[in-house]
Length: 202
Image 1 (tube, rainbow, N blue to C red):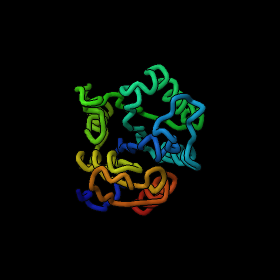
Image 2 (tube, helix red, strand yellow; image 1 turned 135 degrees about the horizontal axis):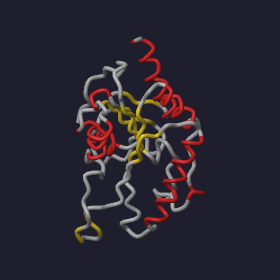
Image 3 (cartoon, one colour; image 1 turned 60 degrees about the vertical axis):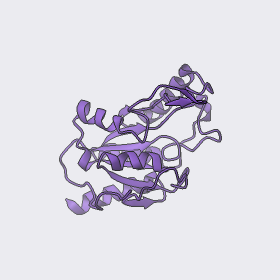
Image 4 (cartoon, rainbow, N blue to C red; image 1 turned 120 degrees about the horizontal axis):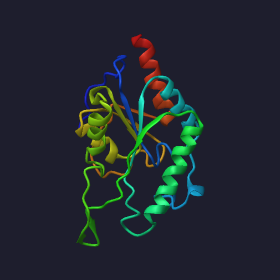
């Protein structure tokens, strides 16, 4: 896959969306790949300030990610809800205006048995088009920021801009072939990149 052009989404037409991967981009990647309780959630340094800056810049902010641990029985849906609420509360407490949080708890197959497919399971594009229809987000001016090829491939499929980060998996998962428009160290640098582009376009 090849990303769309390198032009930064800098126009002032709103709303524009930032779709940010949960584990490895916003929060540290847990050892098991999922957090079973709020105490296991650790934000990557600088991301809360970066998310607040993105709020000030007028972006619609979304969190995305697959949370298949529920389907595999590693945690209950109630445990996932507590983890998700902890993340959202931390963002709100830092002045971050989060538009929505998307999480696919389903998997298409469990040990060879058909599971429950979902259009919200990355690299499907359901989250983006849900935001398009419900929040009127202009996907052509929106970005997906993540540490794995799964969410970036989903962004590419929705004809959005993509930016990779070197935190978490650092795009080393190798599940899909995708070339993000830009690769930066972490989410704070990603937001700074978009801020600079907006200043240059002003």
